Image 1 (cartoon, helix red, strand yellow):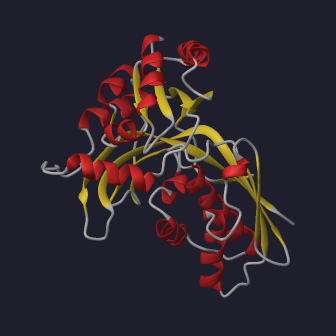
Image 2: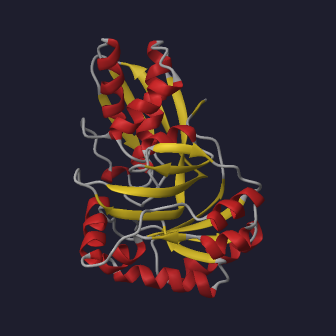
Length: 297
């Protein structure tokens, strides 16, 4: 017997970052939108816990117990007094180290899959609590759709979305470390008063109306200057996408993936073609959202 869970990528349509907290984290107002790029996580009974991975950039995925999918299995097993003897196989299509929560998606997917495989019967609240222990983006990977994440991003409030938003994503030729981007944010912010992070009312209204032009006017990412400081070449795909007619351009999360909001599916194809021909990125993907979170297939 095996259980397979499909789990989506995310884009941050707003990422407001507060000052560093005593615990080293930052308070956030993080507006997540789940988009239709997916990893599939399959768990099967085995003699011991092991992780395998296939797909683009699979060689970059750790296969030891630092992998979030393995950590999810261990966390649930410890709570239930179960031996975590499973083979976790990740079919990866979400970019690795790309600011699209691919690792977090795998953690949420493995958690839900192990819960089903073991008949653990964890409640939604318990699953979300384990997700929050695993990482700030993992709870959203479980729930999907659109949500405002506060605290360090793990405290979720579902958001209404009145339509489908079309996106293009350009993958960089190297990764960016999320902790390094936050450290650079702190360095750049030295001596400045950093306001409390709050969700933009205009952005929430644009989501609720399904209005891509209004959303384009409201998207923001406080980590973008830090990502560009560490990886200046990211300005090139942003400029290429803007020139191709994208309504909005931004670094996705902590990067280095760049995200481009298009008016409709046809416009997304046009932006994608321009980016592929620009020589500014390694690969290009098109996806729309919102989509459902972790789902048992």
